[in-house]
Amino acid sequence: MMAIASEQQTVDLREPSGWRRTKNQIATVGMWIAFVVMLVPLGFVLFTVIAKGASAITWQFLTNSTIPVNVLPVTYGGVGPAVVGTLIITGFASLIAIPLGVLGGVYINEYGGNHLLARVINFFADVMTGVPSIIMGLFIFTIWVLHFGYSGLAGSFALACLMLPIVIRSTYEMLRLVPNSLREASYALGATKARVTVTVTLPAAIGGIVSGALLAVARAAGETAPLVFTILVTQTTNANLFSGANTALSTLIFQNATQPYTGAQARAWGSALTLIAIAFILMIVARLVTARFARYDH
Amino acid sequence: MEQQEQKVTAKLEVPQTTTAPVPPATEANKIFDAKNVSIYYGSFRAVTDVSIAIYQNEITAFIGPSGCGKTTVLRTLNRMNDLIPSARVEGEVHYRGASLYDKAVSPTAVRRRIGMVFQKPNPFPKSIYENVAYGPRINGIRKKGQLDEIVERSLRQAALWDEVKDRLNKSGLGLSGGQAQRLCIARTLAVEPDVVLMDEPCSALDPIATGRIEDLMQEIKSQYTIVIVTHNMQQATRVSDRTAFYSVLRNEKPGASDTRTGVLVEYGATQQIFEDPHDSRTQAYVTGRIG
Image 1 (cartoon, helix red, strand yellow):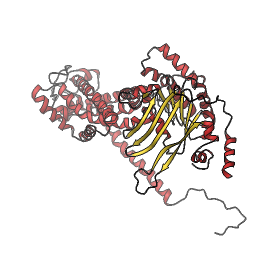
Image 2 (cartoon, chains in turn cyan, brown):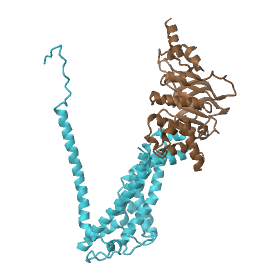
Image 3 (tube, chains in turn orange, yellow):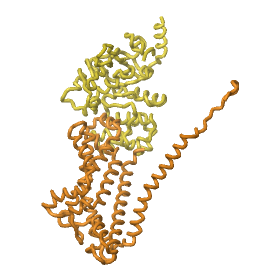
Image 4 (cartoon, helix red, strand yellow):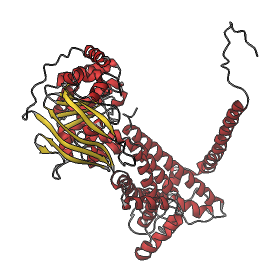
């Protein structure tokens, strides 16, 4: 097009049409589809568990002793021992795995440098993350249960093996994100390395570390395979972690859900909802705790 | 002729410094005495053969083009370079008569006496109060009353008290750039160091915030010894008593492994460096002819 020299030419600032705009639309639609596809199974799982499990939930269901898997309807028996078992077994597993895992992550990132030991731990944490949970159960069965018998403690060990690499990796990744300028500021005031780590680096990363630890706890609480080999089963509450067979919600779900009886199946759904509720409460508590730690990062 | 003119212009640019004439440099008020210091990062020699003495209650400015090693030398004075695994120092650095790089010397003890303010303001993600109280706390001060006193004194010294006294428990990250840098200065002063090293403390700040920090340096220099790295030559003329000019020495030898290294070209009273430089390289730099 010929423009007259004296006239100022208007600049075209409109969005260029054509392929670029089309690409944007395709990508946007694609993201929405991915979002919905991801949300549907998640929502469906929650909906199903609530729909089938809510009717089973009563105070008596949550606290009563379990009964042998049989034809009795869901109003008989409860999941009290399994709730207690899940809480103490997962709790003790967390007590082992979280401190060890955080220390491991701190070692790799803050102290290990390029040392062989740090690289070896990092490598094995990576490998262990991929080990199937049933292997952990068999491992503890072989080295512990065969010698000392079934107990909640054995279950805790198995779950701790599962949690440890997750906690190490997440701690390590979070510490890597802490800017070096913060560490330097602390060193420049005459802080020792331990002081820097405890008072500056760890607090700066605490939000992410708690999230990572929590993911590990939630995963462990839902694990069935490592417990099947390590805690056996019991009908009454066994608050003693260190001796005697124990039970957990996940194994209870497994036993009941594989039965043809409607009562047992209803018990399985009720247990499933209870387990989800426990994980949910745990998440909320951890979020509150993290928010308190992170109230100065903005 | 042309050179002569530029020298005159440079002279005119130097503002009237309010500081008293430079006190005589004597052995007694020598804080740092570095002799033939070379600093390596791995096999790379970042700084070669620097010898410099720094005197008590003075502000010493390090100037020079990028990559000339002025920050590296600064970080050698409180052993911050120890934190870089590949860094290595050759030569002698004496601080008040003690050899800084002696095997028996603890870098922690060194840094408690020789504080540092960094280029980018780096407050901790803690409250303003906790930022300032951090240093005293790690030095074992626990009493609330004593900490309150130190926090107020340090924030006043850093000319920040009036702006933050009503929000001491708010995050230090919520401050503006200039305020955050003054918070970092207050944090450094809270441990009552002997020396404050400043690594381009104003490079991220606007002229007003820069002016406040320069005023603050003048106010505290009667109690501290300050070494400042700056890219801003006007700043060096405004605040410092002595100036060290560093430059990059290029090794033109073909196949040489160290192709460039930082050297100390000239060191003297600030007025002399800017008005009557003895080295042609200093002259070229301070008159703005080369970078």
